Length: 298
Image (cartoon, rainbow, N blue to C red; front, side, top):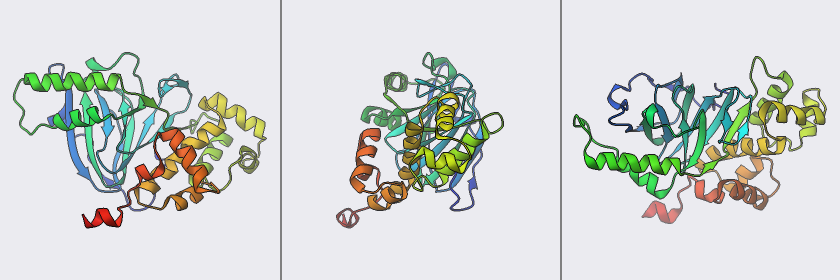
């Protein structure tokens, strides 16, 4: 589960079993675990008996989730992919269902605020993983539920109400198709897997499916069919997600939009910005980690 893992530094492996102090229960179904993690912190594939909402107040994390054969990506698209990679900027969060196998990699230093939610409060039909939009209200609710330890034996009425509001806000949050599915490594078509991995390594190298298909010894028509059959999407839609996954960490590192656009295969900044805004609902500069001189002096 590391198809999109960056190779900038040696990963700092983090423990995945130190959750006893934050385990949710039916009586206290919503728990928040806040911590600051440096870039390249890595949590190996693992699963929990409870649901999880991976959210960072600052920085950027990558979440790789294993999928079920009949899972719905973002609640809409059926896919036989065996893993989906999500990039998580501060305005988004990834829902991870109880029992879902997942790994997390910190791309840029992050203030990670993870919600652990008892399996009993999982919204109906929320299987697998999905990206949700983090509203201003949900952001503040998460912050308010970050309670100092030790907690009282029973939750206060305020904690209970905050938890209920968090669950209601999550349930009504808009979802977003912000994942990059990959075909099964062992049972999927090898040509499709090779093409996908090549695009992920260098999405700006070529834009057309015909060019990539020739590299793996297949026709454009064959590869278009494989994208539909194995990933439940078109090549154009899949490539856009791959470009976003490539661009978001670059923007978070403060690279100029012009450089990110060129690396993503766009001939002009305006074309890249138009695609990005249509997909993300905000311009690339909104996700930039650059600090302008006026801000640095403040």
